[in-house]
Length: 87
Image 1 (cartoon, rainbow, N blue to C red):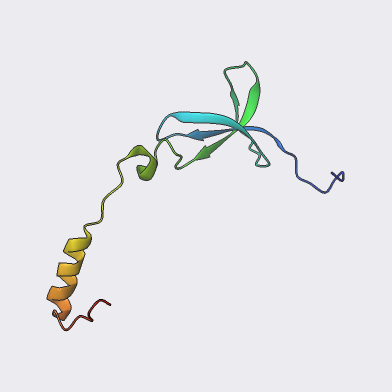
Image 2 (cartoon, rainbow, N blue to C red; image 1 turned 180 degrees about the vertical axis):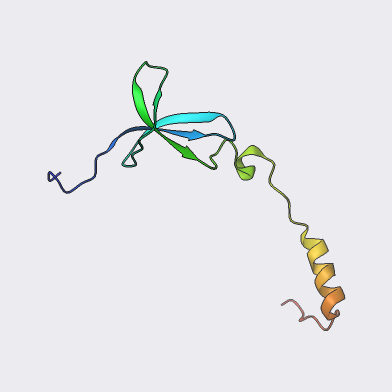
């Protein structure tokens, strides 16, 4: 690696405040806030709005779209009309 051409790559804690979850990883992101981690070291911390711990897809709380209901709604609005035959 050439010196002075790449950003600083260092350990950073990302914290999801809504889920009370934090994880330590390496990143080029930086922050003025710090947190003391389990290993006794102090790392910069970046608060995020959503992570795998709070995202509906990963938690299993994702909303299922009722596709059959959507088709019926479309047909009520625009009429049934003629449908092309499947090959």
